[in-house]
Amino acid sequence: MKTSWRSASLVAGAAAVLALTTACGQETGGSASSQNVGATASPGDYGSVGAGEDPGGPAGGEQAAPSPTGAPAGELSVAAVAGLGKVMTDGVGLTLYRFDQDTAQPPVSNCEGDCAETWPPVPADDAGAGEGIDKALLGEITRSDGSKQLTVGGRPAYRYVKDVNAGDVKGQGVGGKWFALAPDGKKARSAGLPGLSTREDPELGEIVVDGNGMTVYRFMKDEAWPKPVSACTGACLDKWPVVAPVAADDTKGVEQKGLMSFTRPDGAKQQTVDCWPIYTFAGDEKPGDINGQGVGGTWYAVSPDGKPVGALKK
Image (cartoon, rainbow, N blue to C red):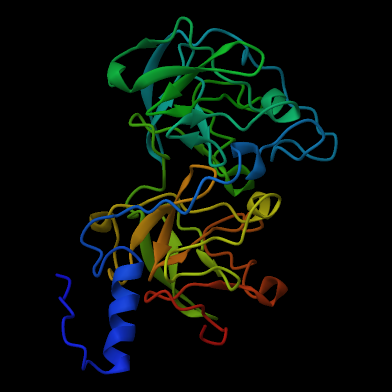
């Protein structure tokens, strides 16, 4: 509950506490709140991938095996995948994916050019809701070429060219920004893990991880007060994908104060811990990796109270 500060005789320290607890939007993490930090940039300014850019797919000229990725979606269904739980598939059983650099409100695809060749958009024209799929979550967007792309919960849906058989999930986690679609439009993630939790790292101690067990980081150039502001934009987001909002009751071991989300200028929502924006690192290939620790002297893993591990307190 917020305190009413009426007395002009309050000490400066108490006033500072008031600024700290209200500027971030909430005093506790009982429910995720959202703030808009402005709308000064277009979606493409924050991580769009086009011709000539790295889409996070096959590298070094590697040729992906042929796959019916340009086929109609058909009747969508749900498949159980070991370690990921339920994922959405198309009519022939190919896994559907979502891209962290897209937005859901409003639905916008930032995968064009070479990116769309590695991650073909799923056509919306004949998509149907099979068993386990909520038809109300299905929608469509019009792409720059005029084609209609399927959306799930507002998120544009894609296939991955290296998935050639029903049940393949080779696109899961690619580049730290591509994830299989769960039936509700959220990311499919490692079974049993909350959206945010902690683990004991042998080098860093207790640090925060996301729903896939990947290490979470803070950027020392960001701001938390009077409102969260991310200084990681453009090409920075290719290496440091933002962590999407997580419900307060979908966390474990993370301090609830300052646990909230805010709206970036591109319309994407980003999670914070202690009001500080958080990210993952594309250079971390598997849970337990901490390759982003100390990069550039500005990126650090996050402790449960939101502090940057191994960095001077900001």
